[in-house]
Image 1 (cartoon, rainbow, N blue to C red):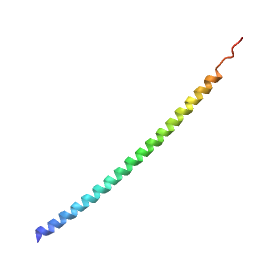
Image 2 (image 1 turned 90 degrees about the horizontal axis):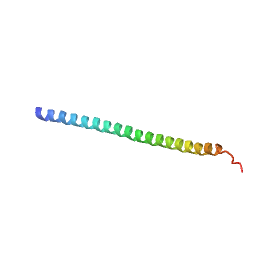
Image 3 (image 1 turned 135 degrees about the horizontal axis):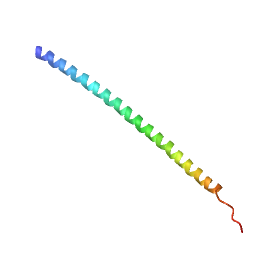
Image 4 (image 1 turned 30 degrees about the vertical axis):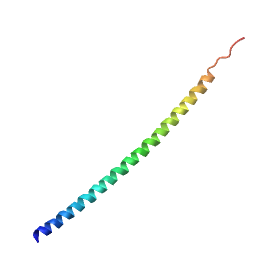
Length: 70
């Protein structure tokens, strides 16, 4: 009977370890997904900024055109 009790406590420990492992894996998954979303949003901001900078460079180049004399 003592062996059965220790096996039962060992099974309880296994369940506790599994619960902690699944909670840790779930937290890690949430962090990884959140990081991926933040990285994608940052990429969109940088891409928008680069497009605006390119557009501004184009209009600046148009304003630098000197009129030709005939």
